[in-house]
Image 1: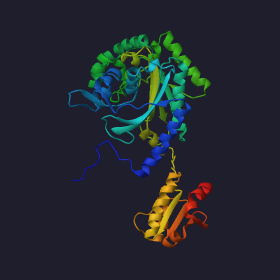
Image 2 (image 1 turned 90 degrees about the vertical axis):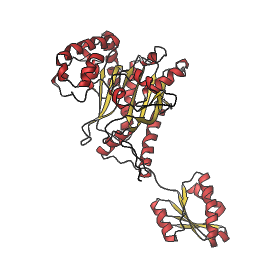
Image 3 (image 1 turned 135 degrees about the vertical axis):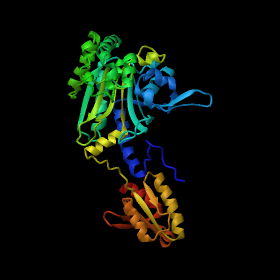
Image 4 (image 1 turned 90 degrees about the horizontal axis):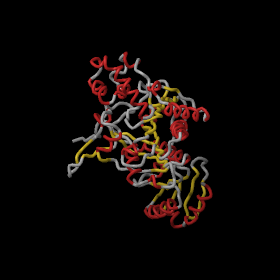
Length: 422
């Protein structure tokens, strides 16, 4: 019986993982430059964490979570996103007590959502994200957006658009909520069943509906920007001013609401404008969450973050014709002839690896010509040729495969000789 991977998941084979490693290292180096430190949280959490933080009325909680009961009948969920887990860890470990505030954290790992699989959208996907918790300064909103943009720019992407909006504070959201109810109520029976429910529970979610997005009432819906109070409006202007000073172009989209309930004030998305990228142009998104830490039992601290999918990042690279070319080259490939030569090669390969060189050798008893072909296939810089005669003489032949030059070097001097050459 053939057993394949579950639908919506995929294997990453060695031909792909090198490319992923280059991307991951680029993102980690960028996080270090921006002074964000890594946090690692469990891949599953108590279900109530996501119900309380992401929101009971969101599509993620209602339709997309992988939820199960353990042997003690506790409801657990594979994490569908990263912010809730980071916020939970921040509260649980009292990170607010640290003198280093805001706490600037990044994460990288698999997330799980039950969605219809399509290009760039899988049921297990890899997310890189950052969270800055403990500051209500508009400058850090701009920093997070700058970081997000640079994640793509550092890998060569150019066809990017930063879109932002303000969702306002609680007072502003409540005023907007009432306006949305009054606007959509006459059209209730024309909307999908999900939107009819959202109208009663969380009308802001109507603006994020994929089914009714083309309904005329959507285009005429009242804008949140019309209901921002003075504080929310001033805060949004401050965020934009920081972006202006940083010379980061952006577009304000008053229909942008994001799909998570914990967002307040700044919300943003980065989109690909590359030709042929696809109908869904969003690459990543994020925003500010001023009540989440308190809702999870922590102090009244605010935070802001964003997350990107590496799968969609790869799609954007492909759309712009950008090829990541990882370094596969070996420093040395050891070629052997004879039984004694194999034992000597094992010792030499071990010593070279301990000295920091990337080295391999033949394990299939191939002929000498086939071993040289393997060295070429692995883009080895040097071939070290050892036969039984060389073992008896205590030497090896070291060949520069690019230039064709070959030298005979004492076996006990090869490591030091290559250390000077490479």
